[in-house]
Image 1 (cartoon, rainbow, N blue to C red):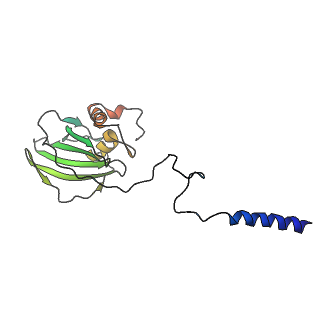
Image 2: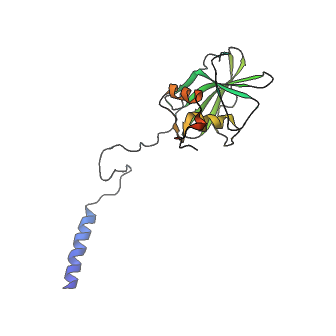
Image 3: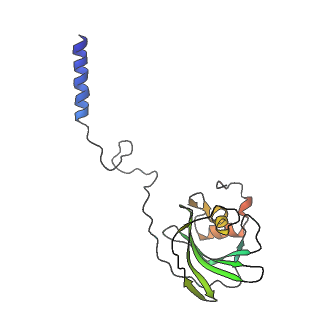
Length: 186
């Protein structure tokens, strides 16, 4: 009797396996055949071409502060701040030394990968020159680095952009994000 019951169970088990198919290359969502939402698949990053913006003016720049004191002063030109369709935040950066020397650059920042890119430098008022090194670099994880401050305190919230649009990022720069108790990025 046991042998008969075992044979019947074995036949049903093998019949159930015969109807199954090998998994396809596409993963289903709990047996659903079509996409029902959730986390989108990671798409390959494709950077859009960008042109140099207008050269930053002497006034109207937004000052921001790195986490460690510096003798230099750091500014972003709000007129050049943009979020591209590739999710790259682009901006003109101005660094002023105590002696009055200026360093002007046009940069990009990717929150998703914690990387920055130098597109070019201001050589004279109104003129840009392309950067020789156009690769993406990791944002330095040191408190005194101004790019770390832009990434962590003003522009990014973990891997996401810290705002819906450019206006939100300008508000972050104009405010004091270090006192923002809702920041989950610390």
